[in-house]
Length: 394
Ligand code: PLP
Image 1 (spheres, rainbow, N blue to C red):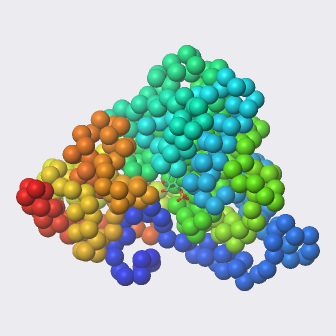
Image 2: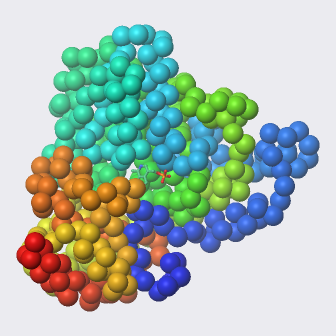
């Protein structure tokens, strides 16, 4: 299989970023060799525009939405910020009573932080939806909040699937509760698109990111349905229906369409294979190492994520020792790695801070093999024993 990291390590961090698909590489290289600003009127510009619009059509059809619903962005973080901040500002401008934002306690920082920003700087009242011990949002709590404060709600934002533990949220039920009350519902589907057979048309707004399904880093999209029009964050040339100005990344957009096409084409086979590998990983790790707990909802989760807690260990020590043994994984969200704090996701699920700190995320993707799992299982007993000795000495 592909040696995607270039130094032969077992790569178990696909949820952070997954290797470029050959189809995406081909589309990217073809476009990088050609000139043309998709807003230019001449032949080169019109050719570039055609590539963008064909890519938009292909992405929209993979997601079950209309081409006009797709707004290209620089990735998932920008798409989430545009949705949260932009929809809040537009809705509040329409009706000043709409000052409430409802979000879940387990969102990625790309949603958590703009929601928090609205609370601290723009007068929003934020309601954080609690989750149960498997990381699933409390629908009864949401319904009660909507019944009590429906007229004040500017936007509801709940992720499709969690990037740390893999739990899938009841998106269709949340969408129905919001639709009944005419409240826009945004979902961060960055971990879901390309892996789950999503029907993006059930939500009003949806964020996706190319590098999670085999496109290069730096391209993504916000899907906007039913006339939802966020206020722009970036002002300029008026591209993307004036919702997101900036010269379009033709090569990135073409590569993202190619990567999504490839992901849809092999979805069933790949998901079944990855889920089998993930189950093997969990079974073999549990058989080789004592006191391991799996986090997340085992019956409704992304196929590629195994999030495990190793009692008596520090996640950082485990991660570095595994890295030295040629196995690459993550403490959870790659974007918050390096900050030595227990994961907000595990804390929201009621996991005690000291337990939460001994957790690692192993994530599998399209290039994963049995060999990757075998290398983890071989390295882990010595690594855990060493991390436990270090923990006991503290
Ligand atoms: N949302 C989720 C759930 C993610 O996992 C990530 C990246 O890890 C993002 C948003 C941010 O996406 P991007 O890296 O494209 O900015």
